[in-house]
Picture 1 (cartoon, rainbow, N blue to C red):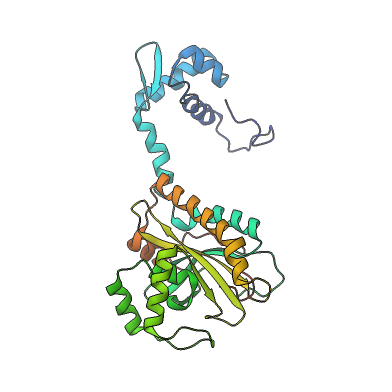
Picture 2: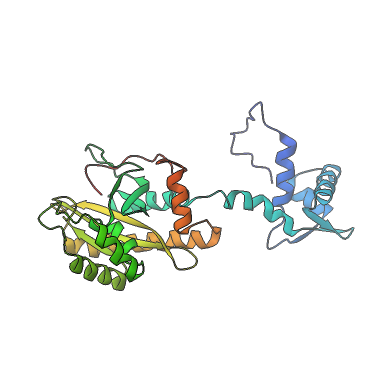
Length: 294
């Protein structure tokens, strides 16, 4: 049935009514009605039989519909219509609605980050509504080994690659809590790998706690991480695990389900492509983050 409500009854001057009707004919077919007669299509789409016949036969000519002379059915070619969208969706595009839901639930900012060299880079971010100066935006980067979101990605790299990265990393203390021993960092990464999430307590910045979880693609490869940063003064480490972590893990699960459903391109090659497109790339310019939350 044509969508009458979207425009409040009034159609823009550019609106092509016949195109709307043609799409309505395609949408008339569904799981409950895989095969329809001409009369059924006309009734469902509120078209005359003559108009419905023209649309159906045009779709037959284009290869989107098959008919045996009485019943009409969609052909697999209609998948092309959806594939154009699915193949253009990027991981940041896909993640943002889930980040928005997470932020609404917990009242804290959240970001999606990918690994670029030895840094973690923010490719999507949704900020909580707080009256503080924004310092984190899409494109911001930090050393991966001192951030929660960096550690959940690093933790799932091969041990040999972790050793190489730690050997070349500048392990300077950013706070009095920063881990600077390669052995201690390796041990922490092993713990993150086992438990499936990372909590970093004031290692990047005094007064900042952050929890993160890895995002896996359909092949089980960790391609990104999602974090929730909080002020240490108002959120204890126990509260981070008890109150925030369950919401974070549920959000990551939804992102992963969408990755599997859409077949969105992921992996290191795709992460590199996102970064080559520029800091904003295809990642939406969402409300900037707040404070110095990372």
